[in-house]
Image 1 (cartoon, rainbow, N blue to C red):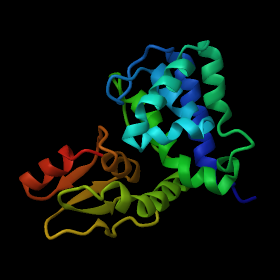
Image 2 (cartoon, rainbow, N blue to C red):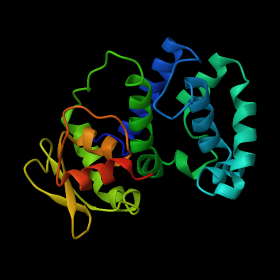
Image 3 (cartoon, rainbow, N blue to C red):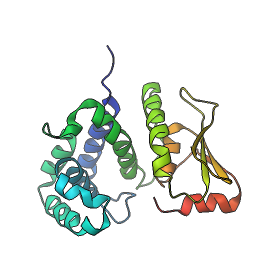
Image 4 (cartoon, rainbow, N blue to C red):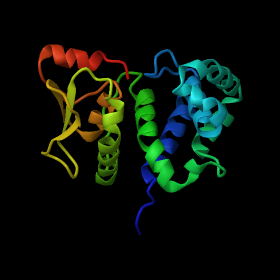
Length: 215
């Protein structure tokens, strides 16, 4: 039987909910000063409040988004975790497997790692081959948009999965850095997250510029 398109989004969402339930509402994350409660509120607003979610991307609307997030964050913690676990409501187009896959696979992978890696000790997960393939597909599609503000070109050089040993130009540039390593670590570096087992090749100044640019 073929796995649904959103299989990884569903499993990452469930794993994140499990970890949040285990750690509680005040655990740190890699999302700036956000705690797990703040991150959970962000995910709920993103999934269930299209009127407020716009402020995530549109700065003039951020105040309203923050207000709605604060209200969500004041709810009972168990109900918050349950709503994160539930995922997109049935009335939302995102509840369709293909849309959920496109919009939430990397979102939940990254945020699960935001919680996992915020507290030492931690180690990268060994992902199943199918999950690596899914992440690689998503990375190729989204990399150009996510890296559009990078001051240098970016080349992906995965060491695992269907594209192991190849190179993919995520962002063109006269000068470029090369991200060589596991697919998950390439995705996390693209989002400006802490990585382990990833080699970033290139001129020192270019590497520094890549690491510093705002996502």
